[in-house]
Amino acid sequence: MRTARRSARFRRYLMCPPTHFKVSYSINPWMDPDKPVDLPLALAQWEVLRDRYRALGHTVEELRPRPDLPDMVYTANGATVVDGRVLGARFAFEERRGEAAVHAAWFREHGFTEVREPENVNEAEGDFAVTASWLLAGRGFRSSPLSHGEAQEYFGRPVIGLDLVDPRFYHLDMALCVLDDATDSEVMYYPGAFSAGSRAVLARLFPDALIASHADAEACGLNAVSDGRHVLLPQAAVGLFAPLRERGYEPVGMDLTELLKGGGSVKCCTQELRAA
Ligand code: ARG
Image 1 (cartoon, rainbow, N blue to C red):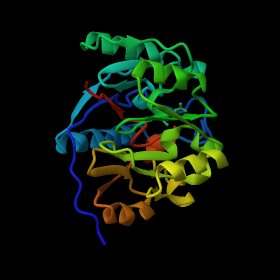
Image 2 (tube, rainbow, N blue to C red; image 1 turned 180 degrees about the horizontal axis):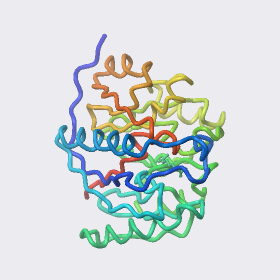
Image 3 (cartoon, protein in one colour; image 1 turned 60 degrees about the vertical axis):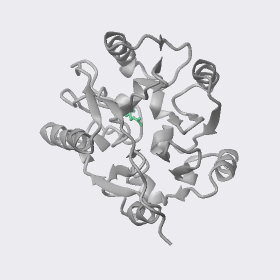
Image 4 (cartoon, rainbow, N blue to C red; image 1 turned 90 degrees about the horizontal axis):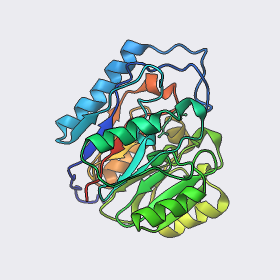
């Protein structure tokens, strides 16, 4: 039996055009500096994603790209905003460290008064996923376990730590996606990305989760963004479309092959600005 149609909620996103995107270093297994990136195609694919959000009625703010920071297109890593409060990022790798200050400056210039510079390494929404009342938090490759306590204290929300074990899924947002953040129950994830203990935690918290196959996770299908109804995801994750529809969601396939060469897709390119 099909679930009734879901309802979308208005969103505000922060994105950064891939004007200076390139794969000149490798800090995750997806990145191969010998594989050429088609920059005009990357820009066109990114614009389609941005315009799709706008066509769905959401607001997209744009961060000005910097030539010395080729990974800036992945804005999900730059800050975590919950209840209008901003927890800045602290990047694990030198190559991306400069991005944190660019994000922090943007927030200060755009009327955000609560902006915390973090003490511990955290790659923001790459490793923090927000449900109605919790933060799910990845660790193992990028964000420090210490960042989980820091986020809990700052946001005043329970943080549930999850251990990532597969370097292909080095951020939580490569392995898990919150489908309806008006609840604490609607997620999809790929179990193989998590330790046995964390898989058990996920099974307890989300007994009705949509479980993704290895192939769909490899197609970066969990690196998706949901507004509560529309789920924007890489179109190559073909196995997720029917189960999403059965649950009442409207999957929207996106083509972001060029940005996948940097190890990210829809979600990595999208930071959500959650209002108070
Ligand atoms: N090249 C970037 C890195 O390795 C990709 C980041 C992808 N972002 C994400 N939210 N998973 O840091």
